[in-house]
View 1 (cartoon, rainbow, N blue to C red):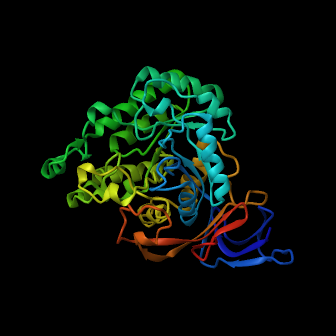
View 2 (tube, rainbow, N blue to C red):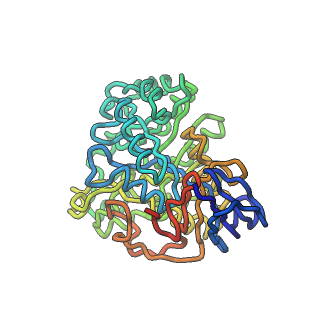
View 3 (spheres, rainbow, N blue to C red):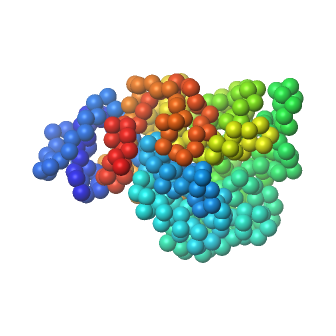
Length: 430
């Protein structure tokens, strides 16, 4: 394995320094480092060195929808975005509700070699909300599943949700809830408000999200388990989670990059690229989730990368699929919405996009500070440049980015996975 000397990087949590990577680890941090023969030097002057990013919410579509994404193409997109680990959601075909399916996804990620893939198991069989899936078998499998979610569907039955929380408590697992009361969102197309009425699109009320979050927090307090709220999107949701944390409950939450930046006004274009679940909300909601991320109420940023083939988005709004791609633009959107607005520091970005998601997902080789002895999962990022988002430049199989044509700051220059560069000079190495 080649040794690498990264020179002159601004190391998060410290000062400008060099990092020596050898045999998959960071073996030294400092200046005037002694290097072994054959060491390759990477000039990082002006770049920020971050720990490899961890995405707790990615849709890789394989098995079943390889026309939209595969584990290989999705992890290539992850590497380009600075992610060294992704958690793959269970809404595949077949559903990842057995040990066999989660092991298949885990092995595909291992074989791809661009980012580590940690499968998320379904909470219920077929994600149909009727009976618990093989939670224990998935936890004991080679994939060692610790996060379970029916994402795309809510575990709407309170009794079943309680049983799931009780079951995973035995092995310190986490239930990640897609908070959506289905009877309040039947046929819903966008955020409910004055604009939905003007556009003639069925509204999706904030209370549909908030009611499930409130219910599940009460259940979690009763059971004493771990609850994670997926893609939180409203001011009311932020306030409910904030109150739960004040009580000391084991509740965590995530926000997507698109909910940090985009608003419901984009639906007026009737362009289905802006159709997403939960829907884009109001400017007030955007301000609330930014505040929640800044003060720690919202623990992490998770992309909810949801690729779709052209035919599922190039159609009328009502027929279009929900979802947006996000792996390759996430760090730039966070810089634009949180760093450039002075709401977060780069050290806090490392916390929200690496340390905490790794902790919630219970993975030990990611989300580690860049220090001697740590696995060499490293991202070099240039915050000074600007780029215009061009969908055809994506390495994902899908092109449904809501940021098309937008000018965003920053670019991932290099991504190292256990000391192996999978991205150098902004491009994949293979």
